[in-house]
Figure (cartoon, rainbow, N blue to C red):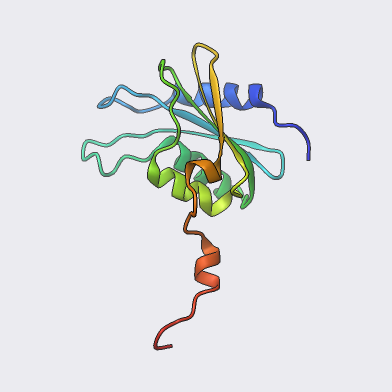
Length: 141
């Protein structure tokens, strides 16, 4: 596999953050995912007045890639114009675990050119994945 173009991911995530709809939190987020195909897909957070209807940038980026036919990914980068580097929230970590391997790099960067990196396994150890469903014994079946 080739090296990950973090600069390209950051550019795509930063452009996505500029499109974020965050009138309530004032916390724009952009995400870029690198598919196994080599293509980059991005997404931004889209808030909703009901709050529960808000969709995070990570899930929007992954959904955009899935719509394009992607199912496997190599890396994910979160961009926020905040001083504190921001990893994905809990539900996004679960969605990431559906499509990324535990050793996949997940990075966060900001407008100060700071970056922090984790593996998905570090962010969500012992994730519930499709493997559990495939290997489970059905009770009463």
